[in-house]
Length: 394
Image (tube, rainbow, N blue to C red; front, side, top):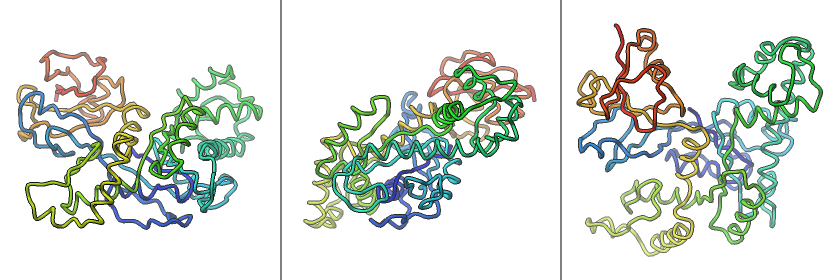
């Protein structure tokens, strides 16, 4: 899975990326600081089953910290987007070519209203415009793809249509659902401009779901703008974020100045090791207390929250633990709960077997729920936190 960080220039994309990954990249108030996409690894959190069973795990594809499993997820900081991107303005062509690789998008919106549509300093810019123009730019881009190819597929069936959209990770079944929704003929392609726009908007929602990070929530006037956004877009998931604060906290924690768990709503400056306290000067303490004040008002910095809501709520992923020994919760090498795999909700046992290894699905006999020790049928739907052993014939 790949999560794309997107939005207009100077909204805080690179700051959120750096906070999530602790990768040092150029961060600047000038537009188009990011040109080539920056890729890194962030972590999402989930309660580890080791705490439920009172056992010590030794993860291989993730981490476990105080009973909390930290599972890696790939994120990419995309180039800034400006109105007219589908026509090639700004870095539009590059952005739209890169954005298709993401499974979901986090749009970082400057909710303070202190930067305009192109990322330049201003006063009283309406952040709602950012939400509208990003979606429209992606939709216009999809419309362009369809219209350029339409003369070749006119009169043909849905399969021909799906081939021109293969780069968007859209399946033929999804397209059939869209055509059925709008009562369009799947056997003989006859589309007008209105049909193409409706299809494109539906495709955007399915292939590039967007969650909003209302960033710079600490700046005066941002909270009022945030409330306006929630009222104007009630169907959207909008999370207040404080990217500068999160980055500062993660750097301070890394340098041993504070104790801070990712996603927590507070941190500790006091530590049993007094030498660490002595490293914090009065200016740093003042800055940290300023961050704490914002965190108390909004329940944290929101940066980890928006990532996890993207994974669990927007992409509808769950975590399943495969094992080879359902009694000891181990793999073939004795590692306890070694892997935590992200899969779609409603994933069946046989689909899960195929994700582990194609041979497991091919030679599938049964599966065992390690918690209940019950056998599971191939069409059994998995739940979040399941521990599963796949039994194969070879």
